[in-house]
Length: 382
Image (cartoon, rainbow, N blue to C red; front, side, top):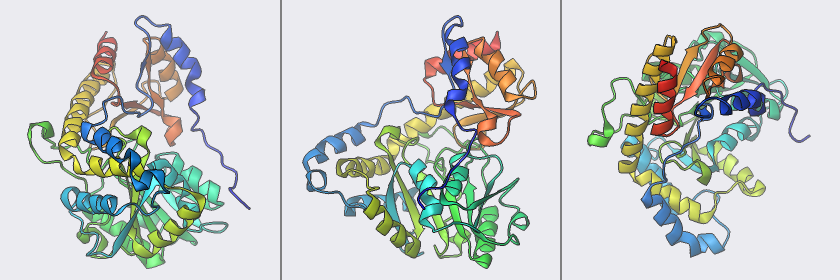
């Protein structure tokens, strides 16, 4: 059988022509499309990588489930930043080679297939849909996953994707709404798949964490008041790509229902989906270095503020997002591609909303340097 066919508008080659126009603009191109970090990897991470370069977990085969130190670091991170005690709720963890492969393989590792339904937000990260298609299961898109009536009585629902903070919209779910999703999914025997990769990037009421204020986390699906004290039927995904600028390290993990994690770990071992040993050491360091995370949080908060103000000046109706690293706007023309063409003429590349299921919108990423954001703001304000 193997992987099934997939189809998606999510194809970055589609914006190549707009990039050519942008490069020809005065001052060149400013790329605010892809959410790829540009800031330095923390010193603590680089040091840990170097120190572990000749460890047994480097010259020998690495541990699929993560070294004891990495597993301890993940548990500490959950306790300190997410108010979650993994042991108390009988949760286990497994590292993944970046969050994207974790998302893309999720439906397959849950044995979803023909006749099974995976629910996801209508406006969302495209890999949710692609992963479901690869498994041969059916995608059900709903306006709001927290509206459990839109999917609870649909035959065949096996899993429900939640994304808070959301890429691309920045929406953040309250603990109460997440608890409703978990309860409804359990009623029908479905698994909640909670993508929380931007959990520490919350902006509503956030203060400057670089000044020593604590990081503010969004509600976690594994928090006791959300999951009713049990990880059963709940899986949470997290990545260090944004919090620690480790996108190229491919460091992420899945945490939750210990029986599901055990099964996934067994399959991952057989197909070699294992984080390299030295990278596991670097990952543990990144999880523990919360001071560096605070510095990065402050950078993104400042960039988002500048970008929001500039987009308003250009004529977009927008506010600071609740979370994540993007400004999501409705196209001035009503069509993302028309706006993409106009923006390219001043050298700015956004991400077309069609990629995320909303062709009437655009996404602007704050994962660009201070200089690039400032230059974009200047052009938008002309």
